[in-house]
Image: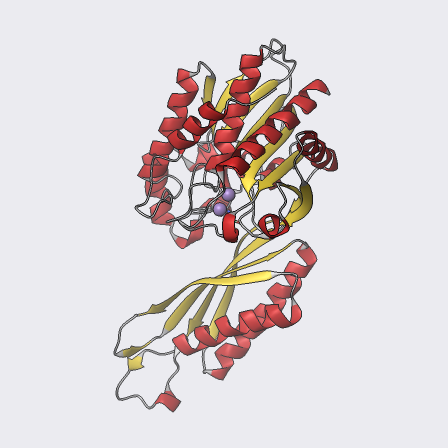
Length: 409
Ligand code: HGY
Ligand code: MN
Ligand code: MN
């Protein structure tokens, strides 16, 4: 069975039109107007093509092709239409467009299905509010407290929920843990350069890292930036900056298998002529092993206390949220691999340093993720690019893998 390349391209263009930036990327953080416009475009595509449309309490948007047996399990394919602020066109949107092309191709084939097929766009994969929100809700992992302090901006979250017509209760009620699923498949760009540098067509993902997020706040004393002798200052900016440099040193020296990032640092009151009384850092660390992540967390907590002491400050090292590491199903990995090889494509198996919805769907059913190469490894920026030939390869592998799973169900 072959995809319809022209139709696949048209779907990809339709799903990446809303929120385009002048640099050619996408700026549509979850539940923003541009993101909701993209969802509306997807809903139109679903309706125009005659599929059943469903949204759940978390705002996840699905197209359905039902088989004759309403009790049958579902084969779910999908990804996400939200982006990071000023992100790229391919992260997430490629996966939703490819999944939709698989749905169309299966329907066109007239194959008698004994499994429902669902194509899903998950809410807030990027964690504008709560990391992997939609797939965590579906897999029953969202607790009320996760919705209390969404990325430290509860007011913004309330506004976004209202804009999208969602409620916290709806999100908490979106669990589908009692439903029957055949499997979950996702196509995604690699967002790194391993496939490109090794000249490999398809990446078969063995598992995803865990992602652990913290708010680290240094507190000192506001004072006059002119009259306070430098030696006498309790300058929170110094403590936070020294900490950020230590994070890099500790990972490079003692945790080369992990990564960590201080992605934001805000000083208060944030004025030229006032020594900062507080400095807040957004800290994130990633590891494929939960135990290693905890060891790194302890090391960075100690480093924060050390930097605080050095500048006469106090420090609060606050855990925010975590997405646990997850292995992908071996059977699905094998099916992705054999499907790609049957199409004459080269494959390699590799771990993902990025989080993905598949790591939550893996709690509900056998889940797998396939990568296509990212040019130069760039992602989360307008430089993100994957050749159309690679996109077509990925979509064809997704269809071939789905067909093999349907035959074996
Ligand atoms: O941050 C990530 O790993 C993914 O792009 N959401
Ligand atoms: Mn993504
Ligand atoms: Mn992303």
